[in-house]
Length: 268
Image: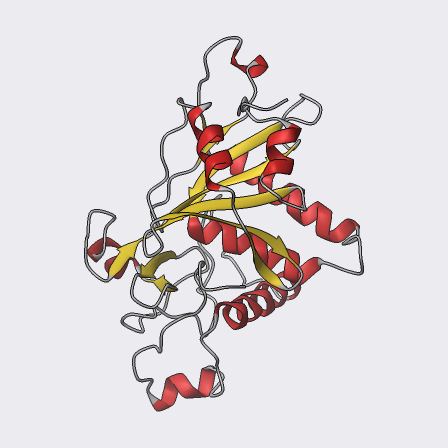
């Protein structure tokens, strides 16, 4: 992965001796290592789920994953925690509710909270020729505006991590112009995640999800965790399909103009 994405995590606040007993003293704060740690925690939680009181109803939070802490103040956080982008180091940091609120999206300093906005556009106007022109070799990729570079960048998940694809900017801008109904993603902290054919009954259609940038790296982590061999295997594809199904479930559909499906993204 190149420097256009969120490459690494900054050094966290000094840890206490008690924290060192629960965390790897050789912890590397690069993005791929952070994904490895999350993959391991997810596998451990699946094998040994934390107990929930019999009286607990649906949606009751489980105990926070041991060792997962806010990377700004070191407070423990649960599995479903927020994130903050370090604009100087191009780093994605785990954040507790207090720190996430402190650096709300309106903040203009070093840190910016990652919003929790989920939208999906099942009628996204894009053709197979558009996708080929974007030079994406797989079925899904995410796009976001890198303010340090001043333009959009594209990545796709792979067994090796988030892989950058050289983005033809005019082609991408033409696709966005063909979809005026879709709200713009906040620079650096939100992304447009495009998947081909998932969540729609239109053969070969593209669905676009506007998601937190952290969700894209969650997908990258799923691919790294489950991918086997050359084709990935049933387990990997089940995890990927489940991820996109959950995005549709929790997100809000973007209404498109009637008949817009036939307009395409500009190339046929």
